[in-house]
Amino acid sequence: MDGLDIAAVVIALVAVAAPLLVRGLSRWVAVPIVVFELLLGIIVGPQVLGWVGESAFIDFLSEFGLVALFFIAGSEIEASALKGRGGRFAWFGWAISIAVGVGIGFVLSPGEAGVIIGIALASTALGALVPILRDSGDLRTPFGRSVMAVGTVGEFGPLIAITLFLGGRDIGTATVVLLVFLVVAAGAMVLAYRMPQGPLYTVVTATLHTSGQFAIRVMFLIIAALVVLSVILGVDVLLGAFAAGVIWRLLMRGAGEKQRKDVETKVEAVAFGFLIPVFFIDTGIEFDLASFIAEPLLILAVPVALVALLVVRGLPSMLAAPRGSSVRDRVATMFMGATALPIIVAVTTIGVDEQVLEGSTAAVLVGAGMLSVLLFPLLAAITRGKRATSADDTLEWDSAPMSDPA
Image (tube, rainbow, N blue to C red):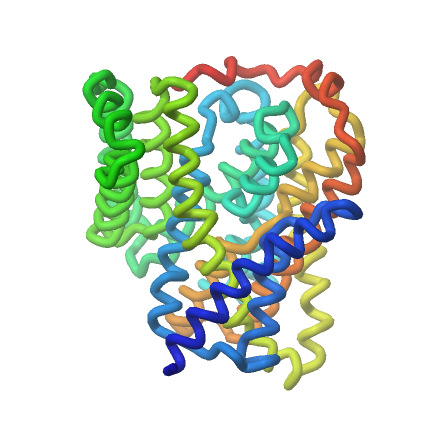
């Protein structure tokens, strides 16, 4: 077998091993599956065992995994989560985060590198939090909706900032291009909301268990259209993937409960069963462990960056906690809000590729992001302890009902 064959088999083995490890430890502690995907990726990668090296094909699949991650994040968005007090405070908290983050970035490295550092520190890994919230049963609780609001803003805001400040255009041109994209995406969302749903669902139902799989093919069409539009306009493709997820949710909003669950199961099978694990495993494989070995002082910088994530992004996230939240839930919201990785990987890759960010700085930020995914959701679960559903359900969220699609 050549290198590609071996890499594919090893990554498949890691993807199978990760949920088994999660299941084995679940009786003692709840560990997010991405923890094992990242760690096992590092172990099998060139920095440790050397079973898997760099591969253009695996990188290609990893990019698809990142797109799938943001698509799922967009498809999980509840408009009600961004309404009322929770939504307002989520945006206000992110405004504080980006201001403080860029300020710290400019102190460390004035110029475009400072903006990159600021965007990285002001991000939240909504795509990584969605499966964690789903698996814990918190996705539809007031706590889960507050985390979703924080995560939505913590991913959407940085994507806008990347488009405006890191696209190689002046701010005026970048703003116009972004507005064009948003207008087209908004038009597509309105069309998806208003289009007749009966004929669509008839075809979806008829092909759910056949080789036609119309729903999945429509999903890929929406993703391809929005991602290609992003490329044409020079907007970050992750913004296109995120918008595609929102459009997909609007298209499927009126489906019957069983039909919607059947379709969601198929989408999740493609995303969480194949593409997204490849992204997280590949992130571990490509982690620059050698830089830390060569420069031991960088190891000390990682926990400092981790604390910076907690201060810059975590503390302002507490503002979005529902009224009446306990101290435990507010602290848990802080940990969840400070969980970051995909945006950090994306924005530091841009910085290194454009030679405005040092590779060592990127490694520190990515290392902190990996640790945040490893530690913060776990600390949030430990902080909350055993969730009392009845108590959660009595908290005041101050927003529209969850069934409101608008």
